[in-house]
Length: 98
Image 1 (cartoon, rainbow, N blue to C red):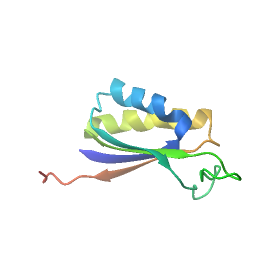
Image 2 (cartoon, helix red, strand yellow; image 1 turned 90 degrees about the horizontal axis):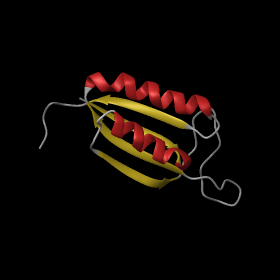
Image 3 (cartoon, one colour; image 1 turned 60 degrees about the horizontal axis):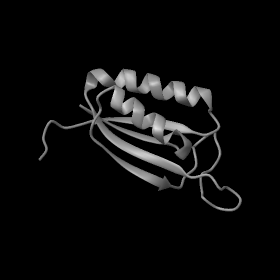
Image 4 (cartoon, rainbow, N blue to C red; image 1 turned 30 degrees about the horizontal axis):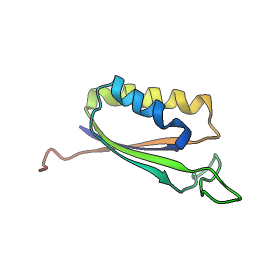
């Protein structure tokens, strides 16, 4: 099991939810309005007059065998419109939990 943290321009929200549904990644937590700026490319998302765009973020727990497919689909979205910004970060999870 892996934790996948996805940050993206809010315009991608419905597409990402659709991808999670299609891959049977049921559980997630979403933050629909977040501010930020990429480390090397893309436009800042500050929700301000100068930088009006906003970002969203999703944290989901994904079975190991679904991670590559999820990342491939997210990469395809980002490749279509790279200036909007989309990043995914993957962390291993401990088998312990509540």
